[in-house]
Amino acid sequence: MSKTVKDHLLSQLHGRTARVAILGMGYVGLPLAVAFAEAGFDVTGIDPDLRKVETLRRGESYIQDIMDEQVARLVAAGKLHATNDFSALKDVQAVSVCVPTPLRKTGDPDLSFILDATTELAKYIHSGMVVVLESTTYPGTTREILLPKLGEENKLVVGQDFFLAFSPERVDPGRTDWTTINTPKVVGGITPACGNVAAAWYQQAIETVVSVSSAEVAEMAKLLENTFRMINIGMVNEMAIMCDRLGVDVWEVIDAAATKPFGFMKFTPGPGLGGHCIPIDPLYLSWKLRALNYTARFIELASEINTSMPRHVVGLVQEALNEQGKPLKGSRILVLGTAYKPDIDDLRESPALDVIGLLMQKGAQVTYHDPYIARIQHDGWELESVPELMPAVSASDCVVIITNHSGYDYAAILEAANLMVDTRNALGKLGRDHPKVVTL
Ligand SMILES: NC(=O)c1ccc[n+]([C@@H]2O[C@H](COP(=O)([O-])OP(=O)(O)OC[C@H]3O[C@@H](n4cnc5c(N)ncnc54)[C@H](O)[C@@H]3O)[C@@H](O)[C@H]2O)c1
Image 1 (cartoon, rainbow, N blue to C red):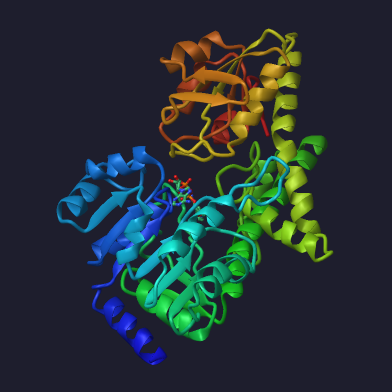
Image 2: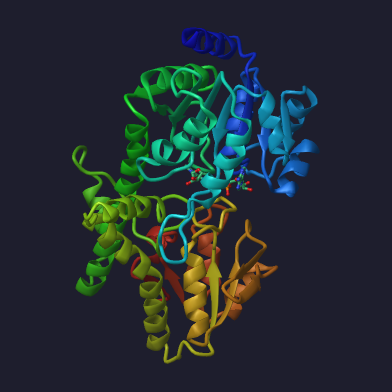
């Protein structure tokens, strides 16, 4: 009997006749839904955000990496549906959960979205279903949070009646060489059968599936990847602070070190961490370890350095103005680029938010320009991107480059600016030893 459930589901997955639901149609969920729909599955995206649902129903995308035409084609072909009604789960066999996993104001994990999605899922789970959690979270979440609600409470046996796994998302927004489809995908099940079923499903749409022995290994692998980045960025940010004290150009140092063909990996300093992942995910791990009476020291130290960077940048602006005999208070500061990384429209956790807030606190008159971010509302302040860049550059006392969007003509900006603080080495050689430029 139990074998039949698994075999039947596997044949639906291999034949791509299984109906798929994606819970959470954001930066992760929409590309995944599109990948499964392109593979031939009938996919329903379920999201409480009605604006997203309506946009998709009109055949439009709200994610830069997904084109309107692709959504329109899949919606018209009846392969991609969107709803805010969770009862659509009744008729699906394969569910992927891609809901947010932010931090609370206290810095602790906020699992409320996972809990809400699991509660809805628990109402409709049935025999012959595979559920994969994609949201980044601490090791143990799939087994400790999802399994009891989906399995025991519904009298379903995991690995026999239904199948539960974790598969971390690795999407790098804005990237075109590595996408949802060709980035290898790690999958780990609650039981070996769960792992097999989940891998069989994902193999239909994703080029390389890497099976690991448990959900916990898959959960931890994602945290290793992001902790690796966070700690190395923290280390190189501290290098920048140390080079500043030593009067050495950190960018030249990094370029020199990067000529070593082995044993070195280049990371670059910046005004602080941004995005939904790198500043947050490692703190899920340190939180979990704290409960086990262990302090994740590398994570805490890197986090401390990274979160101090916006203040360091404001210090650089203050010193640079001081050299020109100007106080920061009352000075006109133009922040160039506010998205958390170049050429994307994502502002989440962007260090620009902290830099702008700190500059305002010190009495500076702050404006910003970003071709991707028209308006910012944050922490009691609100700004709109200046309509014309070059007049704003020449009218400002200091231009601070926070995000090095590739569309900017940096030579022209430098020419027009009175003073620049470059936190990204966007000016490169132009900025080295230039009397108008201070670099991180
Ligand atoms: N964005 C990235 O680059 C990235 C990369 C790797 C991993 N992740 C992880 O993937 C997860 C999702 O991130 P994202 O960037 O797609 O977030 P997002 O905010 O863009 O999208 C999440 C979506 O989930 C919806 N949602 C909220 N509660 C829900 C519920 N109960 N049921 C169904 N939908 C619900 C929201 O309305 C939203 O549309 C997070 O855990 C994140 O850490 C993100």
